Structures are given as C-alpha cells and as structure tokens.
Amino acid sequence: MDAVNKIICGDALGTLRALDSESVHLAITSPPYNLAKLYSNHDDKMEYDEYLRWMKEVWVETKRVLVEGGRLCINIGENKRQNISYPTYTAFTQDCVDAGYLYRGTIIWNKNSAAKHCAWGSWNSATNPHIVPRHEYILCFSKGMFKLGGEKCNCDLDPDLFMTCTRSVWSFGTESKTRVGHPAPFPKELPRRLIKFYSFVGNVVLDMFAGSGTVGVVAKQLGRRFILIENSREYCELAVRRIEAEAGATLFDGNREVVRPGGSRRDEKVTLLEELRL
Ligand SMILES: C[S@@+](CC[C@H](N)C(=O)[O-])C[C@H]1O[C@@H](n2cnc3c(N)ncnc32)[C@H](O)[C@@H]1O
Image 1 (cartoon, helix red, strand yellow):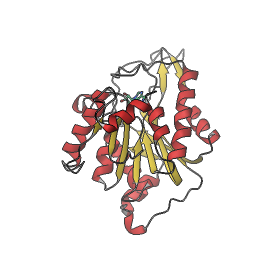
Image 2 (tube, helix red, strand yellow; image 1 turned 30 degrees about the horizontal axis):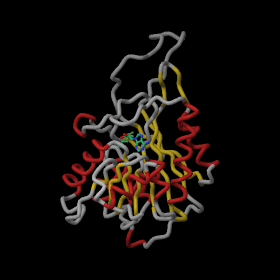
Image 3 (spheres, helix red, strand yellow; image 1 turned 180 degrees about the horizontal axis):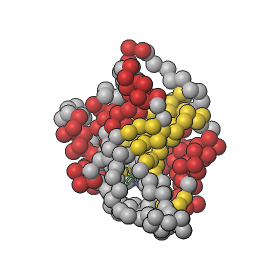
C-alpha cells in the first residue's frame, strides 16, 4: 500500500499490517497512555494487561515496516490512574527488547512545567508523600543494527543540536491543548530533535497514533516524507489543516487526500481502508 505523505484514518494495528515491509526509516509515536483521556474515538482505559498486549502487537508490526537500522521512538509518561502507578515505560522497553529490537537508550523529557495541582499525598509528612511527575520518557530502539544507511550530505544536524540530542535529559515545554485542538499533543520540538538526530533528509517518518499530526508537520518542514495513522476522523482533519498551515500549502502537491473510513466507496483509496478495517 502506498501510504507515503498520507494521513490514513484507520486503526493503528490494522493499517500497519497493510504497510509494506521495510518502508519506514523512523517511527515516532506517543500512544494513548491509558489514562482515561477523552479522545474522540478511543476509550483510554483498558485493562492494563490488555493495553500492554495491544501495544506489543503495535511494536512488533512497526518492526516489520522499519528498514534495517530503522528506529522506533516511543514517548510515554508516568501512568497513574486512581492512585495506582503502572510502570508502563519499563514494560514497553522490555516488550520491545523481547520483540527483537536493539535498545538505544531512554531520553528523559523534562517538561519544565509548573505544578497545576497539589496531589502531594500527605503534605509535609512521611506518611504517604507522592512523587508528582514533571517528566516523560522517550524510549529509543533500532531494528537489526544500530547504524542507519544514509549520505552525510543528507544529514541536517549542527554541532550544537547534535550535542544537545546526545544528552539524556531534554528540556522544553509542553504544547497547549487548546491552541492545537487535541487533548494530548506533544510539542513540535520533540519530533524535531528526534527526526534530525535519527533520520536523513528524504527518509520516511511514521506516526501510528498521529493525533493532531505533529510528526507530519515537522517531518514535512524538515524535508522528510511521512505516514500518519489516526483512528479519529476529527483529528485526521485537524492534522491536514495543521500540515497545510504550518508546513506549507503545497503539502499534497494539489493532490490533497484524507482517507476516511465510511467515506465514499467510489474513492479507490477509501475502499482500501474499508478492507483494512475488517
Ligand atoms: C497521545 S495522542 C497522540 C498525539 C500526537 N502526538 C499529537 O502531537 O497530536 C494518541 C492518539 O492515538 C489515537 N488513537 C487511539 N486509538 C487508536 C487506534 N486504535 N488507532 C489509531 N489511533 C488511535 C487517539 O485518537 C489520539 O489522537
């Protein structure tokens, strides 16, 4: 299936299964965190084991579509719901290693954010003080080998950014949900660093939980191609608007395309998506 420079409105796993093997150089994603977020087309409160099994299937399928040396970067926060903390980032790490990925390392994203709440547990007392997260994780893996083939002339890093990226703590602020119009967007700085650090100009960058399309916006701005998968039609359309507005109106070269499940069957591409949903 030719998915390059397309926003595919479909299920992440089902759509991944239809992508060609070894067709992606870098996958960057922030999956649903299972924190009961109010997404327009996903109930974000699965049983923890079921959630991990689903995610593992996604990591396995992502590995198939990556080229040898291709990279997977997973952004995930602390997972605390109803006063129970789940070590999701460690589970993802182990699941990816078990799936055969090579572990490159973990970046701590220091969100520089001020506390919005006062969930300290027992205030100023050792009885039950809580740790309030100010960070998220970016788990980084390679498929098959650590090196990614590419020409140095297609590398767009500069020494300062390179040094910044090699340090394991990255500090930058969060993105406004209201400004973007999505309940959990990450800031463009996150994919900007990962794309420059881990891919070459012209490479294909995938986000299988694309939300408002931040990875697509930045990939396009940086001269990469992209594949975006998102199961909410509302967010797919938001992603199209953002990519056009923030990365240039010529995005689809006059051939703008949003593939919509349930859309007109006269459109060949939509028919393909109908098949994917089975
Ligand atoms: C954490 S958000 C991603 C936000 C994105 N990084 C951004 O900057 O906007 C996760 C996204 O996964 C989507 N999603 C949930 N279940 C899905 C599924 N089965 N297939 C595809 N997308 C799904 C949600 O609608 C949500 O937009």
